Length: 122
Image (cartoon, rainbow, N blue to C red):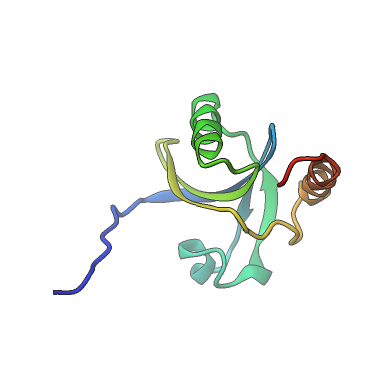
């Protein structure tokens, strides 16, 4: 017997990367024409263009509760959004990447700089 991980197949419209820094939440989504990147945007990163997206209030609130319970002031969280607009949580990465080229990079950089100047650990 070996461990196995099973996942529900999501007929996704798009993926979203949601980055949380303290009380700030930033969401971006890749747009691509690459067939490989449609399945996983990381496969053909150069083919992606990024745009800011609105995260639903309920999803945002639940994410903040989760990250607060995990005591994470920073996390890069991945979601898939299906064609009905339902957001599916995939993971929260406490050391996730955020500095690649997308429209909110500078805002995230500023939020991290602000967080790092506080006297509590990030």
